[in-house]
Length: 102
Image 1: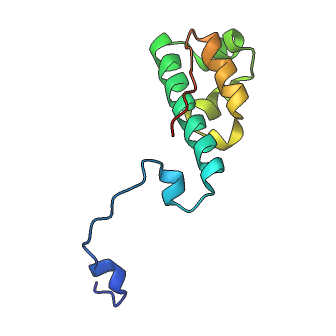
Image 2 (image 1 turned 120 degrees about the vertical axis):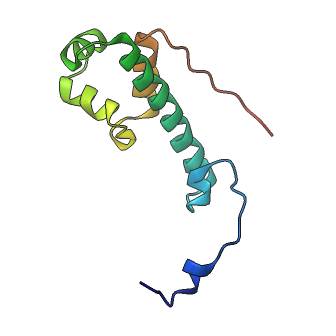
């Protein structure tokens, strides 16, 4: 199938900013929070998988419902505030840190 859209034939490489959310057009402040949420969610989800718990056991340990554990493991970052993700990470023995640059 051939397309006439010139973007399909564009083989140029564009460097990213280091934050995919900025690259997608989000405001810088919002993009930073979104990136933090994704990072904490990824580490929290990884730690849960390492524990080998069932979702029911994870829910009991974390003090949340099993459907919330499911959404966490599926990477549904939009369902969790940064505050909640940091709280869950802490319950799993993780210690998220914020650093400032620039």
